[in-house]
Length: 441
Figure 1 (cartoon, rainbow, N blue to C red):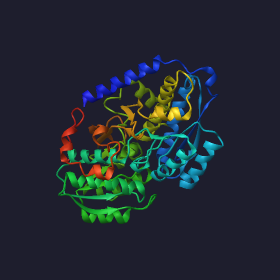
Figure 2: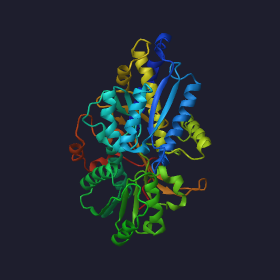
Figure 3: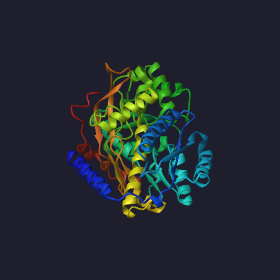
Figure 4: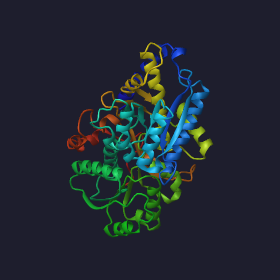
């Protein structure tokens, strides 16, 4: 793993040297500003991390513009609320591209919105960076020219989740799922359960619950789980739904009966506070964590964490990191495209080409956007909740960082077919970070 990280850092350094040697974009080619359309949830239950994404964009762009923008061109954001639903989001998306003349778009969060906007972006011929899209179906097999993703997808996140569960808690026999009733909830469970059954054939799925998105009451699911007493309760739910389910499960004592694995709960640690018990397995949807063991004292990371805490009063969560990654991809693509265009300002086709094959660093580990299909390769961080004398909410121990290349469908292959090739030998390829030992059993 360390050799792979060395190679990636070396590659990044060489890329930076190449960019530094390029001439600056000629004055006559430059636009007065770069108009950047950004979709995120500004209303509804998903705004609990849609708004942090917006806050991160504002912090990043304020600093970028204060330093002269991109090759002297300031970036002006226009935010679109995904809370309007697919049709409302697409209507605003088209308006920002066609009427506001957006140069670049960053969209979206919702899996439904992500699948819908890809063809629209291609039709409008606008470069779109998918900054927080989960479903692998947004890109797989589609060969988009203008659309890329600057983070991982559900396959990476769920295969890595299975590895962490089997490392921390290898001897369980039964499992139940509580996921949101929409594309992400069903697709992520299909990937997770498929891989789990291949790596641990003796496991029994005793219940599958898919409460509606935004459900305010989980009484029936919790009562059923208390009767079944599965060894493990898995959930890839997020945002307000995850907070509501966790709070009600805590109040009913469900955490005493089963081991919980909440694959996206890094974003809920601070909000849930002591209502999230110790010993819960947590995923970070990327290697994003404000106490990341490799980057907690890194100047770039710690400086942004301080600025975010000062602006919002909260620690950054994964959509913050995803937004910064998308911004770094934008800046890196302009640098790369200008260098490849003999210092002239690039057109949108040159910018789209530059994004494919781009390696960049957000706040934590490097991310590479694959040249073949525009899919981002992003490592995954997991941990187990524990108490802290410094924070009034749970932090993580027994941290594991899973390399993206190990758990991502290879370019050009079908996810459904690739998943059938995985087996328990993959567990030998991952281990805990530093002194972690999986003692949460």
